[in-house]
Amino acid sequence: MNTLLVFVVAYLAVTIAIGLMAARRVHNAKDYLVAGRSLPLYMNTATVFATWFGAETVLSVSATFAKDGLGGIAGDPFGASACLVIAAIFFARVFYRMDLLTIGDFYKKRYGKGVEVLTSMAIAASYLGWTSAQMTALGLVIHVLSGGALDLSTSIVIGAAVVLVYTIFGGMWSVAFTDLFQTVVILMGLTLVAFLIGGQAGGMEKVIVKAAEDGKLNFFPASDDAKAWWAMAGAFFTFAFGSVPQQDVFQRMTSAKDEKTAVRGTLIGASIYFVFAFVPMFIAYAAIVSHPEMLQLFDSEDGREIQRILPDMVLGRMPIWAQVLFFGALLSAILSTASGALLAPTATITENVLRPFLPHLGDKAFLMLLRLTLVTFTLAALLFALNSRSTMYEMVQNAYKVTLVCAFVPLVAGVYWKQATTQGALASSSGGLLVWLAAENLAADAMIPPQLIGLAAALILMVMASLAPQVIARKGHPLKP
Image (tube, rainbow, N blue to C red):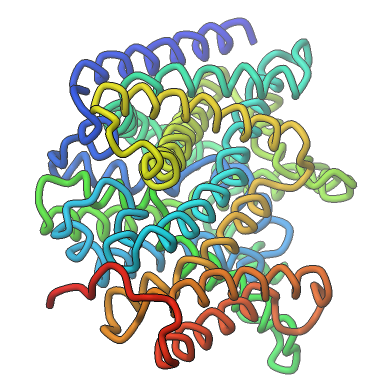
């Protein structure tokens, strides 16, 4: 354990050092938010992959698969990968040509300040769950490695401080360089661990056959179970559509050196993510095949307990070199996602919610405001993490419901429907949000998931309010073909 702790401390120190070295490239807000729009293909691909491959993929999605099979993970990796493909094909070129700092800037140019502020606040709020999931994961790792000497809450605070330190100075440049380093560690570390644990379980074929026999490879529910079909659709579309109007996806696409790189990097990153997301699932199920007693974790009332399958397995039954590889890969996954998850809402809040009230703010003052906002959001996400008992998969899925009902329809209509108006966008965004909240409180267990009801309302209101007499004046302007 001492050797492993030394490695972890050294790894965190190296990560912070890389982030601080990258900070020397930051000279203005454009450098801080989109790395000066200069990332080559390999770095852009790494940042896209790292956007999605986080704590929930390694710990929570893998554990959810072990418990519920493929049918339980329709949102991630299936919906998450679909989101990146959709973003690359339908939005990457549009965003890149508009030369924006944040996705909130799109809503301002297309619909005006009112829609900009409303959607930006919803987008920023959605990151609380996602960022908190990464903090919870990092805290879980520190807690486990300390042998219980540090309680989970203290460990979460320490983890949040580490991510904050190397993100606050370098912004997107720090994210890009650390993502590249961490992606290499993830790919190598988890692959080697998968071979080791798979061998202990009797080989890859035995693990896959066992998963099939246990029904874990059944993706679609029974044909007569309508509610299960709707639940799967809700999970898939929450990720596939709700993740598109997100600042971190936008930042990674627009940080590329040109629009062709933005498209290619996003598509390649999505492909690598989809394929490699199955590696932690294999590791988790191989662990259960080798040690069935670990199924006891599924009986806990605390949903977070099932996320301990892999850490407990590696610490209790793996040689030290495998522990170093696994926790190196896990820390890489967490840190790469957490840094982006902090930077994205910081950019949206500062640029699209606060800056409209400070029109004469200079670039140096704006950089300072960005960093102060980053600290504030970190504290808010930390409080959320300390008080949540949901799994990371649940926390992430709940986050995307907000943007699904509030920001997705105005985005699609703004790009592809010239008749979309400011009135339509306001009605869609606010109405979709209100209908979803009402459905969550009044009919949470209904056959159709509340977020899909909110999405339908947002679509209907966009069309009706855009075609109706315009009480609210048009602002912004349609995009040029």
